[in-house]
Amino acid sequence: MDHRSQGRARHRAGRRHRSGAEPGERRGARRRAPRGPADDVPGRVRGGERAGRRRRGGRRGRPQGLGAGTPLGSGDGRRERRHRERRRMTARGGEAGSREAGSREAGDAMFGDATVADATAGNAAVGDTEVEGVEDALALVGSRSAADDGTGHAGPHRSMEWTRARARAARAGRQSQGGRAHRVAADRALGEALAEPLTALTDLPSFDTSAMDGWAVAGPGPWAVVTSESVLAGHAYAGPLPDGTAVRIATGARIPAETTAVIRSEHAHADEAGRLHAQRRVVQGQDIRPRGQECRSGDLLLPAATLVTPAVLGLAAAAGYDTLLTVPRPSAEVLVVGDELLTEGLPHDGLIRDALGPMVAPWLCSLGAEVLGTRAVRDDANALYRAITGSRADLVVTTGGTAAGPVDHVHPVLLKAGARLLVDGVAVRPGHPMLLAALDGGRHLVGLPGNPLAAVSGLLTLAEPLLRELAGRRAPTAYHAPIGAELRGHPRDTRLVPFLHRAERLEPVHFNGPAMLRGIAIADGLAVVPPGGADPGTLLEVLDLPWTAPVEGGCFT
Image 1 (cartoon, rainbow, N blue to C red):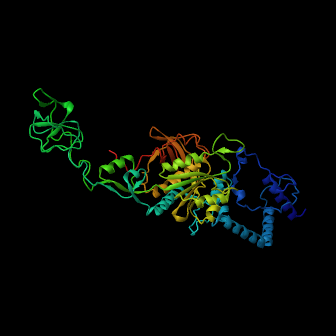
Image 2 (cartoon, rainbow, N blue to C red; image 1 turned 180 degrees about the vertical axis):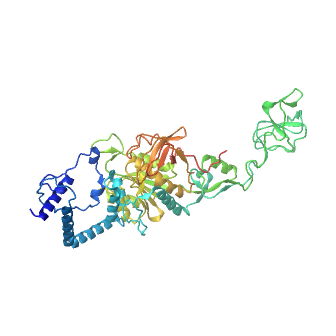
Image 3 (tube, rainbow, N blue to C red; image 1 turned 90 degrees about the vertical axis):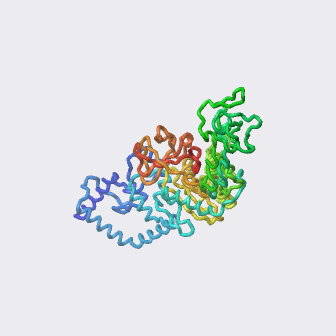
């Protein structure tokens, strides 16, 4: 065997040593050590293997000849390998270039400006670490936000940063909110938001009134009781109250002129001679509500964007309002997509109960929407297209179909409908493949993932800020609270974790997987966990659930 043949033999033996191949085996057929159950999970991606790593060594199918044992990295073997690689690349350069260009074009067609080269770079960044689920695979392909090219369809599932996605949803609602204000009878404004500040049209109270049932007295006591009349609410006393006299008065009644104070009934008694005696010291002005005590005419009572509650209606009426200028509640329609969903009975034969239909509509109501209805839509692109384009709601909410599965039709239907994607995938777990699109006529669509907790994430990430701005409401005051336990984070994405308030700390609940509702059903809100996680005691942003959040814009004393 000559010097060059020996080098080739040692090189082949070295390759077998690295790959674990037996003599006669091809390198591509190498065996893998068992990795445990996680290796069999559908949707897991080996970063390095999918990134298109170039094979090194001999041509496929070449016999391996010698057994293992030659030291790795032999000088002769390395030189021979380099020469062989140069010859192969020279001979196949044109073919490889054509193949690479074709791959790039295919990638451009599928993922917009996130090309195959981008996907390769993304996979190389994570090396051989395994990535869980379709959300991670999609995130590897498109981790950058799509540039607005006028169509909004640069590519599916762009991972927009979570806070940016919420801000974009709010901006979309704000831009569509203009011109929606209407003037309605005050009793029809409940649940809407004030489109203008509420200012007092009169003093409150508009005259001096009695704060208690009792006696209106003038001057020092004891007082002669006027038995001929009493002062009742809605009636005025004729003339001023003479000094040294007392008259019965009811709560809310107008105070007679020259009255010194009101004495509560239980704090005075009348003797047989008809004279009133105070049992306590009388202070001038006691138990009298002076005119303008609460406000003066023209005072600001409530700012614009305040939610009209029953208490606000009462204040507006007291301040003199018959009508109010408000922003109407935006209308919404829910489209529950899927052939596998049951509306009653127990799951069977691959069919499951629809959990999103009963949940999403009332959730939208709690966010300020007027829900027109909930419709079931088959896994059919034409049926979904008709449902979306036929809806007249300000907001269409779909459940499921936002990923890239064989029956995920939301993206192609939106493209056909001429919609513009504003958010196409958010860097948040759960709920990565959520989306927001602008439809014709100033309408919008929020696409929620099909998993229940992921859908909740989409409601709070996109639907809440959009509806809040469409309804003209004020944003809730952001606040933070310490977490009571360590929370593992995603390396790149924000996590939303259901929690309970416990002793001024946030305690994560169990059963918080994307497909689970058991945890969120008892939760007080969602903790916003930044990429990388949080240690115990870390202050985290809190998203209150609609039924646990305080009403913004109220009057608190």
